[in-house]
Length: 114
DNA sequence: AACCTGACTTCGG
DNA sequence: TCCGAAGCCAGGT
Image (tube, rainbow, N blue to C red):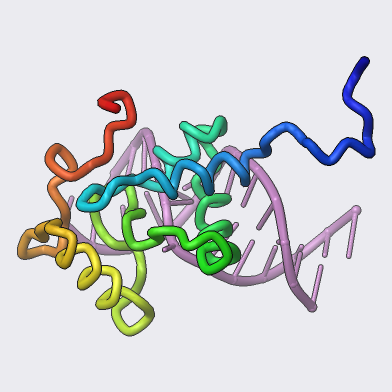
């Protein structure tokens, strides 16, 4: 029978998948908002990922610091988390260039490699 | 329901 | 490389 409304075992939503994916980003690697959104099923859901990080990182213990923008840089502003994120990444072995950019070819997480 | 906001992304200049 | 505009999506007011 078709899925009933009252059925709690719902099909994973974009939100659920995104969280699941973020949790899988290995230590020492990073992923972009768009990348996560794409793997979660919506290539244009980068902004949703942002919302998710803000609303659920603490509930799901997400490695929010491993999420960066498509330019390979931290999107947070100095004084609003930038320093914290940079520090956490460096602690995991991720190196930053002088302009605070990360070498994507080296640290970008590639799920297909798993 | 309209409007605003956000850790985005891509494109053009 | 930097900036602005446009496109995108969902939650909060």
